[in-house]
Image (cartoon, rainbow, N blue to C red):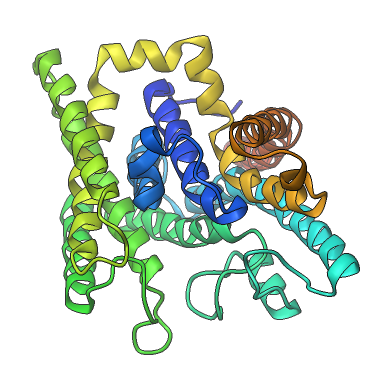
Amino acid sequence: MINVTPRIAALDCLRGLAAIVVLMWHYQFFFDDRPLSFLMTPVYVNGQVAVDTFFVISGFVLTYVYSQRVNSTRSFWIYALHRSARLYPLHLACLVATGLIFLGFYLRSGTYGYVYDQNDVYHFLLNLALLQYVGPQAGFSFNGPSWSISTEFWANMIVGLLLLGARKHLAAVSAAIVFATAALSLITNSFGEGHKLGGFLEPNLIRTFCGLFAGVLVFQAWRLRSGLPQIAACGAIVVGIITLLCGMMVPRSSQFAVYAEMAAALIGSTTLVWGCATSSAARRIGESVAGRWIGDISYSVYMWHFPIAALFVLTDLPRAIDGIPLLVTYLVATFGAATVSYRKIEQPSRYWIKSLADDQKSVLARGVTRVSR
């Protein structure tokens, strides 16, 4: 049996909403259009700051689920297997799908790629190893948005090692990492955007560590929530949303972008995550049919939204329809693909890989029992 920690459905739903924001941020680059701009201005200006919400949620959830489970070398490897089961199968499926779509572009125009142009064998191998955006890359490649899966996976491994070797000092170490990465970002005036530091250290990797370990600290604060009135959770949600929207209104080209984006990550995303995890109203929304659906397909929405866009362009669909009809068609296609992907790729592969770990634990347990007898 797989040990199950109760889901915090509000955070799953929040992750889904963040995925939609990132989808809409990218939409303008994929299709050269900004539909509903009067409503979506913050998203189109700098909606990519929603990625930091992913990282904060990830740090929170990892600590919530595994803080008491990773207590031996074997349990660390099981943790690593679980994280691989969560991230890798869908990443591989989308990588292959993107490669095939790019082949269609090549056969049609002689150019292997769309939007992202580092699509050679070297970058394919980096993608296979989840190293596509941690330093050795020349730029975005294949399924470009998966850069964050690359950086998050390796940050996840560091969290697991800290749970194994420094659990008692996790809060202090996490605070030190957040402080160091934030300071480095301020010194270099770059929060994920810019040249590699020293020619090899990827700024987006620093950004990922900053947000993810901030999420670890949010979990530590959430554990102390007992006795707080619900108005505190509502206030945190309001502050988080306002701060994120303000951060989104500052263009990446602005001289103040690094401050706005760091505030969005370290104030906006953290207070929003804490508030959603604490709020009973957010819990009810997350546990609703729509909330659970959005939460379930959040990863698939994020991973499929570029391949679906590339397929649209390959088939010349944006020439046939544009504006709101194109947006609606794209959303229906992406959510439909994500729903099928969640049921046919994410869930089966995750449970199968996790079952291997559970079978191994059972074999070891039986061996220990025989020895004791």
